[in-house]
Length: 422
Image 1 (spheres, helix red, strand yellow):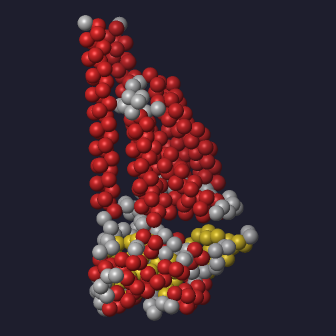
Image 2 (image 1 turned 30 degrees about the vertical axis):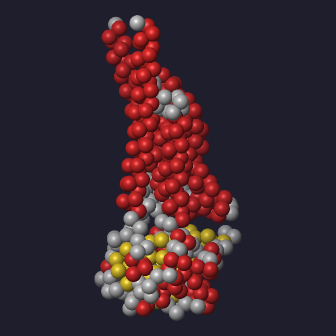
Image 3 (image 1 turned 180 degrees about the vertical axis):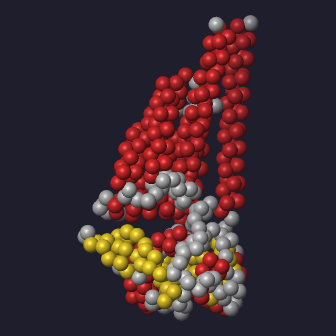
């Protein structure tokens, strides 16, 4: 009987650890995906708010996005490590108390096509999202009963350090994702993408689209050259001609004419100035853009601006920025798939994306002091994925050191107790 009880106890502990790791992994992946691409999560929250007829300041939405992403990631790490065994499970249960009915509503009413739970990392249908949350709630109910009866990886006096390390990690990832670009790009146009091949019209039947917007209950369809202002809400895109292949969508127009195949030069350098949200663009960055433009053109390259607005706004941007480069139009949603940020830059060599950055992340003084050629643009490349792996390994190493120090402390304490007994 004793052996059976010990075996049952071991199996129960293994089951608790399995639930900890499974639920913790879901929260870690979900929180990381949101923090890595914080702009994408902000857009998703605003999509929900627009569906509900609510308008909130962008700064408030950014704060909410950062809070949700951080709490999800940190709670997942704490659960997987067994830290704060009661508090973390209750926190997760409260979160799911909000998310489960929300996903049930999204499944039934379908206000958005994708819940955004895992950002651009991968997409789940609304039905799959709901049943996923049902499984998580069921696991948390079990953990509410049994989680405190199973030990953790770290002692109670060192768990706050684990919390600090996890908080620091997700804060750094979110900061870089918001101010520069996502460290891991899960969107259709990552670094290394050949835009010449993607934008080229191989079959001669490029798709034509119209974009449906809504305001005060009235819906209207626009072509990409005559998109309305920001008081209208994007609803859907419809194909009205041509045909679609499996290539990512990015339709660039010049006064209604599709010029996608001619925007990017197949040889040399091309700088794309991308402005997805024209109403939020800061004209002060035009000095930096013009400095980079001089260097690109001195080296025989080309500069093109693409804004998420119509021809009128394109002309307006040309006047405001004193641009001596062409300014084209595209759908704002498609531009957000290409790059994040109010004003961002995409540098290409022979049509291949070398890097993507927000204009705010580039030091204007460094550019001004550089040589009058395009080598400065090559020097601005970022190795997001490689840096993330290095950063992750460093954080894991810190946690491993904390674990060993904690275990060695426990071992010394056990030896002292044993000596006293002897």
